[in-house]
Length: 199
Image (cartoon, rainbow, N blue to C red):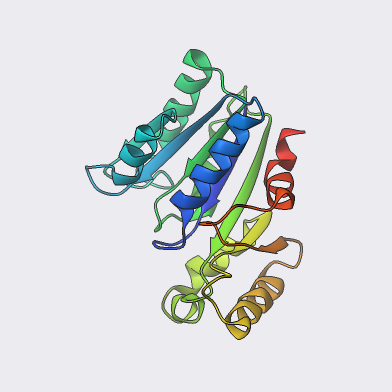
């Protein structure tokens, strides 16, 4: 079982991206599932994904990176035993600290976990504001990422995209950076990069 974690702040486009990636995985014959984590007691994103016919497991009422880390581990183990997916997409809440998520996965070693890929989805329209207000969390999100996707290329100015690209390069020089519009068709190269853990 491979994990692809999609991190990003509220409004960055995580659910839109996740829908595109799950569809692509299924079109390629992969058995895919998604674990959606929402802070509230009612899951909005998971209801939407279920309406599209996706296999969705929800963790509500807290954050999988801290208070509900045990629930995430249990959910992944149940997924492996009862569904045996090729790939599981994890969409943590927009307030999640990816360092805690990785720590939970490391401490609770999952025997069926073959590889993990972390994607940081970034919104260049709000990047300056997020860095001003939440710099430690923004920095942690980018530092943990294997792949940084700068979203909303259709809405952002070249200057906003370039500032975001520079911030990523300064924060995590080893992360691959790509510019996308999650609401439009993804370039095949994006799927190839996202799915490199599936090879």
